[in-house]
Length: 291
Image 1 (cartoon, one colour):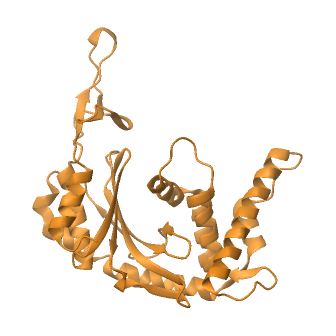
Image 2 (cartoon, one colour; image 1 turned 180 degrees about the vertical axis):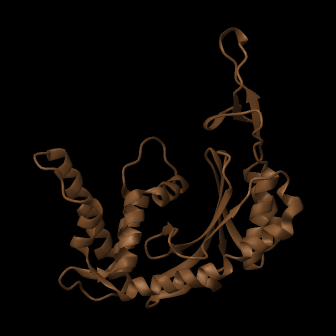
Image 3 (spheres, rainbow, N blue to C red; image 1 turned 60 degrees about the horizontal axis):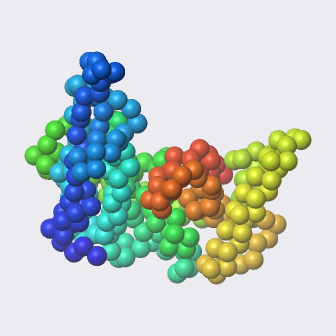
């Protein structure tokens, strides 16, 4: 646990101990082009998802430090960080367990997490108040809850704007209250799990064994997750396949984060980011909030 802001800053600087630099891209025989590429200055590895123009200026590691410092201020600088780099800087900011919110009994709890996204695509930096659910180790963000998202314009030398950054992140204070209120509402509503899953994934394609196999395997994985989490949380046995909307959403989100097949060497942090962008997870959120 990082217990003061100096440790927080040191942790980020140690992880992001490199800069992203802009270098000209040339054609054959060093032919001039108006395009530039982004590269890590320690490994020369190409980063980003495409070329940039001469006017583009990549943010610095110090800019990321400033974002994290401002976010940590919400939790009185007593935070734990997880830092990740993949075509941009990502940091999960977690406070002490004093912020725990019980959802069902004492075994189904959520804890606030601020996810900072500083991509290299020229768009504004994003910070989202999400939750970590200890029952299933899901780390999720609900896109439709008010007060849980802020944007920070990509400008040079964010550290000189620290007061503004702190004020911007301060708007997330109410986001945690809003988020836990929505979660409690989801827990109070019931859905039929089989109908919920059909509404999200549809039925398997006719005359397609592959589609039927994928559908069956996914459904069985999600149902096993629900059953396991109900037992771990001390909930009663399922009646008529009815579960809370909270359970149903987390089963879909958990499947996307932990179980879904992903291409390549995907880290745990990558899986969190991929699940947050997963269309099925977004559809599950809308459905869970609409019942």
